[in-house]
Structures are given as structure tokens and as C-alpha cells.
Amino acid sequence: MRFENQLRIAVEIINEYGFEMPLAKFLANYFRKNKQMGSKDRKTASTLLYSYFRVGKSLEGASPEDKILSGLFLCNNEPNALLAHYKPDWNDKMCLSIEEKFKFVHAAFEQFDPKQLFPFTAHLSISIDQNAFVAAQLEQPKLFIRIRKGRVNEVKERMVAEQIEFEIVNENCFSLKNATKIDHLYEGSSNKPFEVQDYSSQLTGTYFNPAKWEKWWDCCAASGGKSLMLFDQEPGIKLLVSDIRESILDNLDERFKAAGIKGYQRKELDLLKNLDPYLPGREFDGIVLDAPCSGSGTWGRTPEMISAFEESKIEWFSTLQKKIATNVAKWLKPGKPLIYITCSAFKEENEAVVEYIQTELGFQLDKMEVLKGYEHTADTMFVARLIKKEVLSSI
Image (cartoon, rainbow, N blue to C red; front, side, top):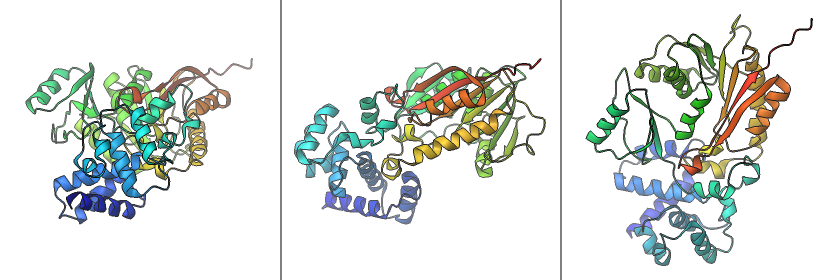
């Protein structure tokens, strides 16, 4: 009866969920309303729902229960009590390769199509390994932290003292299991030694290279992750941060305060409008455009998006990104860099926009890269460094 109840509750939550908010936020609200659910019940429900959404559209026509069980089988390597109850033959094969597991699911459900685990592969950037990227959708990415300069030993000692498991990725990055609780570390500190930031996101910082006293603009700053990297690289820059949402900039202020960062400017700006009244006489030595995008490179963390996303939105985002790039490029000094970033895996949002910036806006490509998070249990992102061409004299 216990397993029947777990499955029933999971299906009820699935039927109630309407994609109006991220699944994680919806579950948090649901659990607050249903306080009778203990911690184990909440954990089980979350596991079953994420298993359901990770199968994407690969089991069209199957019942929610069958999708949940298939997801449990495909997404885990350890035996599971609920799966043992319903599918003991599957539970005995949890250690098989993903290709072998695909065969087992197909034997049970002829309509199973592993290509539909991520049904947008035709749009992936060319350098992406499609099979590896699709398989990665079945695994929750790790939690990564970026450690500020000179404070690695401090953080390492604190992690050991708190008995928190971690792996050293590089000299400034640790990885942890996704569900690791670290919010209590340095809570309320005015000089926090690390930031939660995905590994691929951290790698975008290698494209910045700011110099002392330069004026930089993080034009889609959101909560300020890229700006924090800029300051870590060169504390002497003059930084403007902007976003369309004031509430997001308030969050940025809190993160900057915790990191001990002062002396920056902030503006609430809509980058699709005329910016002349808001940036009179301004010129920048560098612009970071972390553009609004589909987020397709992060759907390993939000698998519900695979079911909710409409393919037509890819071109919509691409058009939006080109408009924003056009509007911000005029504020960059000639010979200086525009850093274009997305957390998308789609070529229309990545290489196609870079091509537009070169041909239509007068930029020269320095370098660009798909940051293949699926090789590191991280998000997949895209970054390009483009240099604004010098204006030739007509004399």
C-alpha cells in the first residue's frame, strides 16, 4: 500500500502542475500547503516527479505511472524499492549502460523513442555530441561553487569541518552533490569566500580580461554572477549593472554586499528601448551580454521545460537576442570586446547570433566556444568574444 500511495500522490501532483512556474518552486509551494507530508514523503515525491519529466516526450501515450517508473529506471544506477515493487526485473538491471536500459524500456513500450528525451536535437549547435547531450538530460547536474582568490584553503577547511563532501574541479572551483546544503555556511557574512555558480558559467569568465580603471557594463546582470567574476578578476574596474527587473537588481545588491563589493552603479533598463536618455555620453571598454535565452543548456536542472517548451520560441529568442545586441553595441568603444553569453544549446541562439553581430554590427570574432557541460555533469553554455571594429576615416 505504501508504494501505491507514493505513486498516486505523484500522479496527483503531476495533474495539478500547469507549468506556470518552475517545478522546484511549485513543489515547494505544494509541500507548504500539505504539511502532513514528512521529509521522506517530500523527497520521494520530488524524485518521482523529476523522473517523470526527464523522459520528456519519449513515451507519448503512456500513462503517468509508466512514465514515472521508466524515468526511475533510466535516471538511476542504484536499486529502488518502489521500482522493485512494480518492475523487479528492471530493478535488477539498474547498473546497465543507458543503451541497454533503452532496450529494456522499448521491449516494454514499443512507442519508446529515446530521441524524444530531448526532441529538439536538430537545433543543437554543431559541435555538440547529440547522443551525449541527450543522455545527460537523465542526470541532475552537480552543484558548483566558485571560490574567491586566495581563499581556497579557508573554504576547504570549512567543508571538511562541516563534513561536506566535495571534489576539487580546479584551483577555484569545487563540485558537490546537487542536494548538498550549504546555505548556512557564512550566512550573513559581509565577505563571503565563495559563490554558487555552475562550472560552465565560471568558464565564461576566461573571456573577460578586464583592465584596471576600465568601464564595463553588465547589461543583463540578473543576480550578478558575471559581475562578481569581473570584480574578482579586476577590482579596479568601473562597473555599471543593469536589468529590466528592479527586484533582480535588489538581489544583486545583496550578493554584492555579501561579497564585500561596493562602488558600482545600477540601472533598471529595458534594452529593447531607446537607451539614449539613460546613458548620455557613456562609452564602455567592455560589455557583457548574458542574453535572455531558451535556457536549453540548463534543462538537466529543469526537465519540465522539455515538455513545456514550444519549438517556435527558438527563433523568437534569436530575434530578441539580435535586437538587444544591436541596441547595446553602440555604447562600446571601437577596439573593445563584447562578451556574448547564453545558457542555450541551440545554434540559432549561439552561432547564428554571433554571425549577425559580425555581419550587421561591425564586429570581428576573437573566439567562441560551446561549453559542453554534459562532459562535466554541468550546464551547457555558449560564449563568444567579439571586438568592435575601428571606424575607418573617410579622409
